[in-house]
Length: 488
Image 1 (cartoon, rainbow, N blue to C red):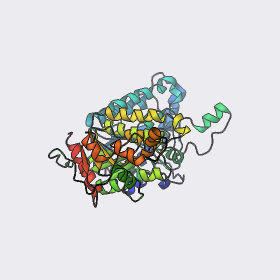
Image 2: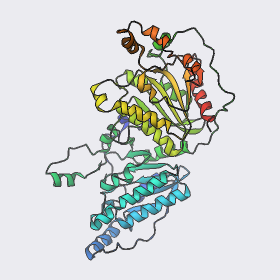
Image 3: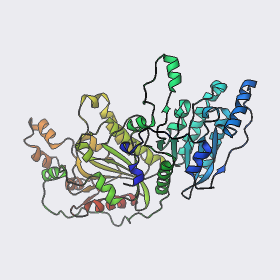
Image 4: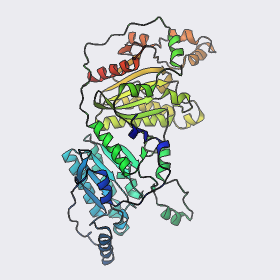
């Protein structure tokens, strides 16, 4: 895992200290290569119907901020890669969005789409400009519509939430990034604490609307300062710009010769060994640069499932993998983990990237909480999401494959399996309880149910079985690459 990816982990986040607020121009200076920014801003007219008091507010805002509106737009290069940028200027009426600011934002999004440029947005705003009322409020719909059209082009949108980002800005273009990062110590929330206190008569709890809390809750992918965000954005854009060559698909694959006569039950026991390589080893051995996303982006996170933007043979892919080690350590495959998986599927579809899923789980969470969080529906959504993908997909059966939790990531167009991987409706012990009333015949049932990789190959459920032994993890990834290439 790269240093950039490590910075996205919650434990690598800032402790909450916030440095001096950067102006929009200062932020762009830190984000972009020196001297590369070119403004797209055009002169803005006075808002229709503005009274003398509002016109005076605008004049003071221009003098105070040195800008003509609350948002700067343009293009530049980031580590040599051309990008379009949007950056709020908080000193201009709190970065609020009125009709002129919205017009500038929409025009920039549309221009980025026409030029097929990645888009980086850095809001710092109190939300809607109250002096313009509902007509300003409705601009959030226009901005969201423009972003939706931009994303349908398969172009990446990165958001950096600066202090503060609240209100309609957070509820529209601040929350639609493919990857979202927040400034350390920033106030990020739907309703500002001052308004909350005035409306409810109570103080909002301290820390809930902080960048760090949102990271812990899975709403943002990382908490980084401006240079750290630049590094992350450069890594992401560098991966997405990859144009390497896939391994030649070659002739149709056949199952590998078995190195032993292991039974299905032997495979079950072997895959439960804590020393067996898992997702972390697969990512390290088979992929290049990696950027790990965090959480669902919608207030939930689970260590059971990883979503990773990665390089495979020099080409960008999305990896959604089950982390058996984390699950064995107590991070069960829960509804949040399934929602993260769906986020990864959407990311692959929106950016037009191949999807690699990694199946390795002792099973989905069994609890009251799981039932109340509709875990069965989460599994169904994952299966339906995979079946609906228009991009190439391959499932890698790495080890354990128990129940619906495994099936959630198994519905790819192609499937490759490690020699001792298995896939079953329940853990064999559970099947034995259903059929025989106890767990005593789990080994026998694992054979009868034909859960092993070779039986799955013979039944047409697996396209290739990779023999194990030294270097098998790398061979498994190479097989996945072949099967992605066959779909292109």
